[in-house]
Length: 360
Image (cartoon, rainbow, N blue to C red; front, side):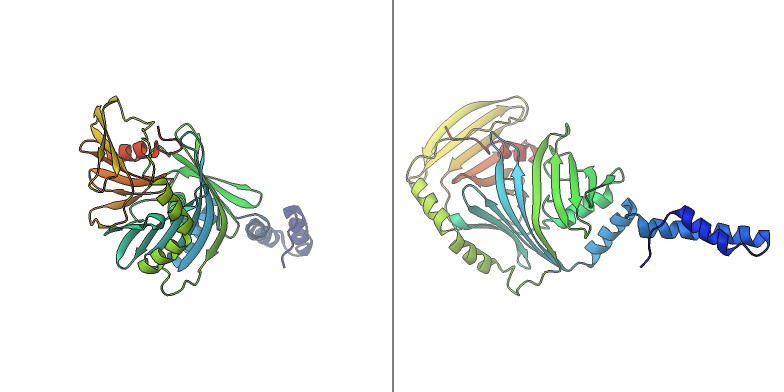
């Protein structure tokens, strides 16, 4: 084991050892030894530098076959913070399972990717969507280890520091929600994610992810990413939430209104109609800089094949994005936002503004 001692002590030792011999030899050997000793001391006595850690992260990501992670996510938007439990499974080359559970209501959504495509499962509503999508390669996710590593490696303006034995990177946020501008990523000495704090352009904290457990190269069962297994297993876990949802469906769900409006827009029409099944449906129509409609209705169990759609992480849950519409479920209500002229980024912000409020 190498003991770290002062460079002056090392120099003294070499001077003593080189007390004999001609001056040219002593000077040359002393200079060479000093350089080698300084490099050795920096390596043995000092911690890893930024480039060393970044290189190790790249190597780890390139060689890792799988991982399993558990985390707590806090969303600081809306009237009150929203808290979720997150479970991430990933196995090369492209298998994913992300479970997102609302801590207050104990309702879970699952986003699953396997050889058959990408699925969004809402077990307590017995509902699933299927996509032909490249997710998550085309979307960064704050709870995915590979997304965090890619953001660190790709940001040439990153800031690096150490805190209490952990590595801390401050880098630009690279998520679909452009409100998220900065992020602070904390990694342990063995390069496991510890905490992620994501902020807006003014450094107001909007999303916090605390990782409670991370296991690299985890051995999953053969059918861990099978859609039917995940749907049936989650259905059993969701029986209390399903009963609660059915009880709530007997009354009126009220109406939710967005607290974020893209540009200058006005609510020009609010209409309540009855569906073919006799259930209420509320339609909000907005006009102005953008024209869009928001439909609110009771969830119906269904399977939908949407080859041109993509799952989108709304923070509080998983939505379904197509060219001109965004669908999501919140507080036992199905929402559909449709627009022919609103950018998808603005559609996401409108959807997120429904969270943390009560119906009226």
